[in-house]
Amino acid sequence: MITEIFQNNEKDYFVKIENDIHRISAPAESIKPIQITEEWLEKFGFSRTYSSDQMIRYERPEEYIKYDIDLSPKKIVQGLKIYGNSIKCRYIHEFQNIFSCLFGKEALTFVKIH
Image (cartoon, rainbow, N blue to C red; front, side, top):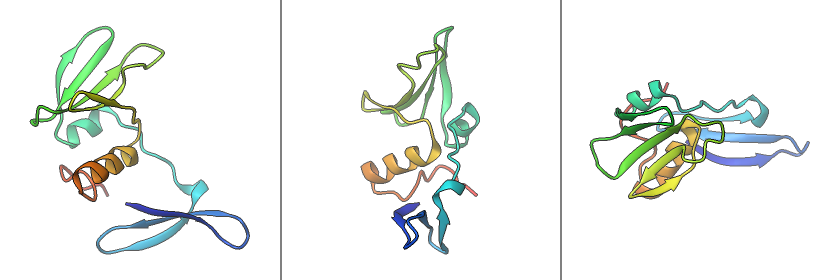
């Protein structure tokens, strides 16, 4: 989990990352976000429930959690749906942060990310 973003004395940005075992600080420019893909959704316990030329929908067993992949160039409807509310998130860390804030979990407990 990203716990802090800070500047050192030389004005360089760093990201503090922690889990139950380790804590590290890494230069911000070295952090590359992982994009949410269909493979990641399946690792998180989602299943494809709908597919068309415009959209692909993935759902968790909990009926209030969905993820839509917008196949149009504008990507207007792409993102997480929780209780019918749309939350734009394209990266795994955004997904984790949302679940941490909403459900009090460090990360999605559906899979361990290594």
